[in-house]
Length: 322
Image (cartoon, rainbow, N blue to C red; front, side, top):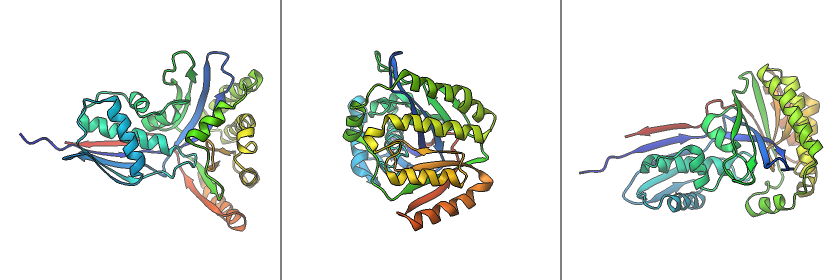
């Protein structure tokens, strides 16, 4: 009997990582994260049953590595599949490229191979969720998410403790000035290993800003208070990482760009993960004019790119044809 052909199409959001919550850990959990899905750039993967394992398109070496992790976790599963990465998010820029590609590949392989596993389980299988589950939750659900931190005893997946659609009338100005890419892999691990313990007072201030300003403002679509809380959280978290990235942000250039965005009218500004991606939150009606100003700023300075993004409030698109 001829084997049936299964085709899978997956398109993921990118993500902005808006900050870590707790680098103290005395309550038994560490990190915790804030993040939001955005509509582009994207990972786009197509997969289908094939005579043998075949990998084409973008990021073939990384895709092969992810695939090997998947089949190490599920060794009895047939490897007959053609994976084609049509689009990939630029790597090491703070937009969640590694997590979105890894989970997209894992979900595609699971659909082709008949593996019954949840998205978080698949994320673990291919080496994600080591610190936060922000990217995993954004793949699943989109929107604005908060995870509850890594349990230091059990090392289980950080739980999703809050998720809400991001206001449709808000936009992000996403900015990538010309500067070195952010830390990743061994460099990132080394930076985390060297972290000092964050004072409980700073953790408490971050939590207070989240619970009593950021989230209520998000629920009420109050962009001014949302932005003010987000900017202050970024400063508190950035101060803790200053020894690893030359200051609150990844470079003096990033600091200047953030200050420009604040002066130009962005309500909430910051750096996504290790950068170099920066962002500003703005009303939709103001976004085109703001983008023109930030592009002029980049042209007159160190150069770089900027674009308008809206939130992705639904997560990845996954289509299966049999």
